[in-house]
Length: 79
Image (cartoon, rainbow, N blue to C red; front, side):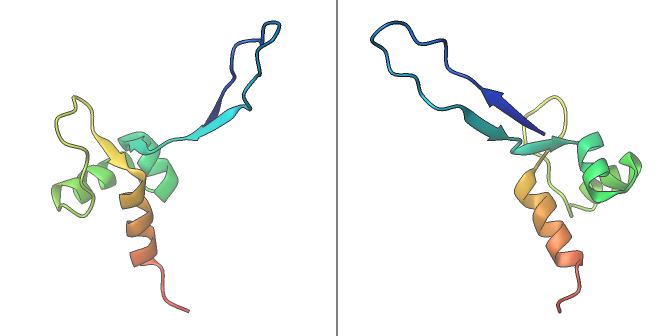
């Protein structure tokens, strides 16, 4: 999921900046489930077991991308 932010059209005498590409830094429970290939209840179980820790103080659970990557890397066998 990348989105692109484009600068406003350049007026005469202004220099336009290149487009900035942003990547998601957090995932919702549904997005995390999709990334990991599991169900949403599985993500809630991982959160309850404190394997994945959502950001505190938010109304909806948002899982940091770095935690999802760490979980995947820990689950992969070393080669």
